[in-house]
Amino acid sequence: MFTDARSKRIVFVAHCVLNQNAISDGTADFPGTDEAVVRRLLEAGVGIVQLPCPELNCLGLDRGDPEGASRSVIVENTRIRSAMEAAAPGRILGTLVEQVVFQAEQYHRHGFRVLGLIGIDRSPSCGVNTTSRLNQEEPGRGVFIELLRRALADRGLHIDMTGIKASRPDEALRRMESLLA
Image 1: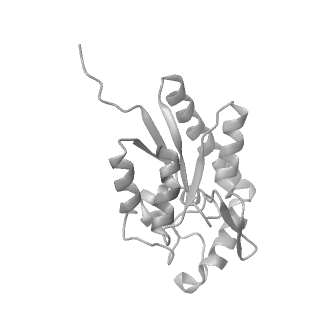
Image 2: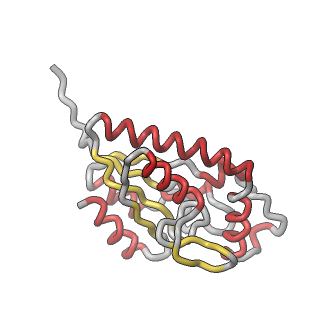
Image 3: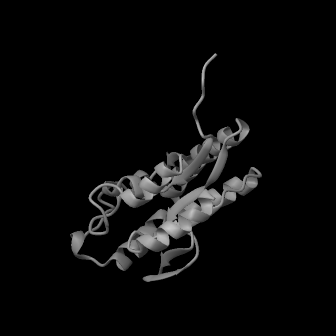
């Protein structure tokens, strides 16, 4: 007989929470990882499932920026959103969404509790409460999160989602608490 110490509690987390090196130049808030978020998840005893980085998978690290790191974050996010909504990235996004949905289905099917998903607000791809469009932050979801939400719903799955901003760590931790309760 063996002992299984798993909590069977899972949280999906935006890629850049765990790896800031994947985001576009000039927009990182941490050298590597958002340690406060990760620390709180570890304290809660939940499994952390890192979402794929849709922008890295679709556009690469360069993101095709002709002006280098001197551009504003808002212009960068708008340009990235437009690129992510194009046909070729759309096909890649569909594949990434299917991979995440498969994982969520597997966890559900095998008795795990998927507590939620933590996205990055203002992101053109992974925003949950806000995204970037036409040079402005606005209410709404990023391209990847919206496709994921729809695909989960099509499969009869619901995952609570919350968006955080690294620039507001106290608010980010409060938003996470609602998932971990």
